[in-house]
Length: 175
Image 1: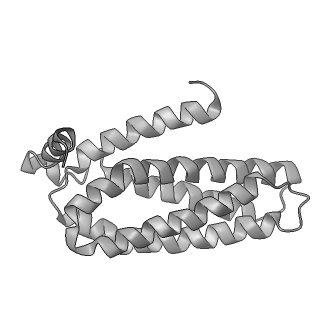
Image 2: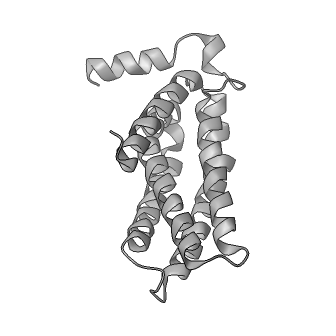
């Protein structure tokens, strides 16, 4: 393992009081769960009620942007840290990354289509179903194992927050 990676891993494992932070604003799992809820709420809004085509497009774009950023921060920061903390359960993380691949393919298909496309709404609906399945596994299997590990959730949460903010600025063109 490179020195920088060892240093980062060591930093994430310091201070027993911080390692199992569960109530803090920057708790990694709370941040990821908030992302999950945001996307779930957006999908429900997309599927429910009578919305104009423009409103559906705006919601679909928001869903795609939120998922793109969420997947990237998980893949860059959370999953590598989780792999270190969950060495015996790497299969769960492998599956989560494969699910991300499928979700990203649907995001691309939605972004490349228009609301006039016959499959536009079906793609958003299926995306919502994939996300629901993925969230159920993450929150039901991965997060509880991480919560019990010695991973510094406050530090990871700070890293996730900073990276998420940078990605959002990039995607919105403010970078």
